[in-house]
Length: 400
Image (cartoon, rainbow, N blue to C red; front, top):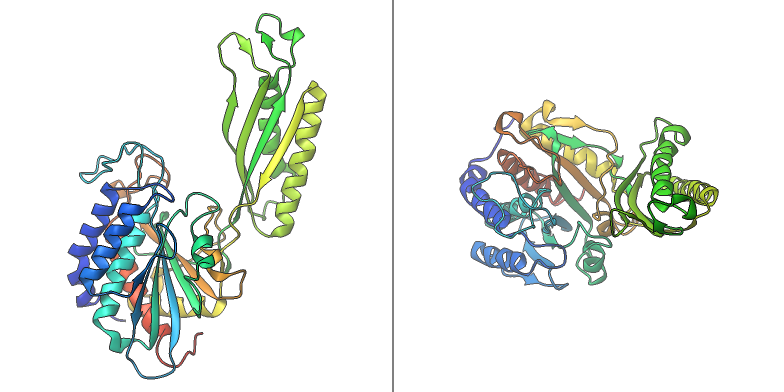
């Protein structure tokens, strides 16, 4: 087995950490990543990468070309770059300097990993045959997302495959969560509006109380999964936001319930929507309330190509050993990475890169104000990315 990290990768670690910490301290929300993109371009040009374009307002594409002989191919490497509307409470010395905005999902790490991998590949063009296209993508966190705009603008045109990764606090540092086939769930949004008759809190009998009706509906929606979906079919219905009322002593006339569903496959999507309509109609009408349910389809599932998955597993084992490959089941967070795969017309592979380290306090979930990632995971991402690109662009196209 090879050494865990190549000497050239180890030499890059100080720069890797500096880039990640700079990005972490200066987060920007979805579709607003102008300074982030400027930093990425400046860094790439300092590395020596000058074939750079901006297919969308805050998206960036850079191209590396190999000189190894053989049959060339084109690989896309995607990193998302946006942050979240969260006030950071991590205690890090390089915590967010932007009030109410935080990199709480590891996207700063994704961008830094791709910068470092670009430097490794740029310095050794003789080690790969073909083109590596760096896809720095905005707005993964805000559907419809930034990937679909980049694809429409031609950022993925001509690519033979696209690779992606996500740092994950669900798995220990040094482990790579790998799954062939469906990896992430469909992610849809629902908005339910209940309309009743508001009035004085002292006379509830004169009103149609949408708060009580809404409370019953929230609880009933939870039985949809526990009693209507098979236990071996990963499914989630989560109510995440309630809007109602203006004062402590006024029963409101309207309530809005906002949430999300997570499931796998088109049939499950149709089933969840029809069941939610049935439940909402029954509870609302039994209380004498009106109702309206709107449904917004979000990101489709990431579906990993079997051949690319096998190639990635071989690459991970060769570098980090058998124990580094962690077979995982389907996961329920969503991703807009599938748009780069264009409904399965282009193969892709997406890996979950462990970044949990309880000893360092790096065990909070994503989207949490105290989220921290184990920075030693970043070098695993850099080495993995460079290794897999060289394996796929070996001049034979045996994995493409």
